[in-house]
Image (cartoon, rainbow, N blue to C red; front, side, top):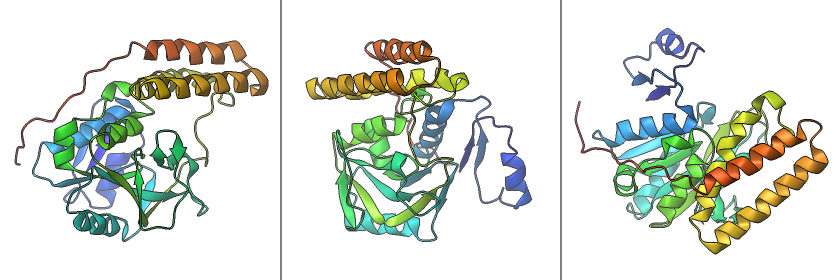
Length: 266
């Protein structure tokens, strides 16, 4: 299934040119819902129909021929006693994709990329296997996030109830432009408005973890502030205003979690 956020890049034409319309469910949302809205749209569609699993991927995720097979092997072995399974994500040069490293705790990234499975509490949507029963239990991703943190919030919401795992045998390649995460200190000034979602959404995520989460977020925000002060080459006040205004907004940001409707067949 391809969810098209009303793009202008010829997605539908590409599907037609490869004669895939009879094999792919193509849905144009009619507007740009953001990454979070697009994922929510697709997961909701699948959860409301007669599917058992949902394999979520970014549009620039390139799976190996056995990526799904390795995920399903673990799903069968665990007898569905899990909340999600994440693939190991490499960048284009074969190194670990740093922006998609799962967290083994809320505050520590995974370092074990050799063991067959590694317990994790947060993972990205770049390649994630979700049992539909879990989606129906915990609800859908939060579309109001628009971009950033929607995958971490969702997988953490799941891992608070049931275990999640990194499956190192399932490998995908993330063909992102760069192999590093978002950094407001170095971002082009005409793209700074996007960061309002990042800081607002992160506060929502970490404040749910109680005092430790809030302390972590405070230290993180202070670190980003200092990075802007000492590293940013221009528009320092604009960058700082974005960080702190969005952080404050996150303290009262309380979107409603939606749930899929009862199963329907087509």
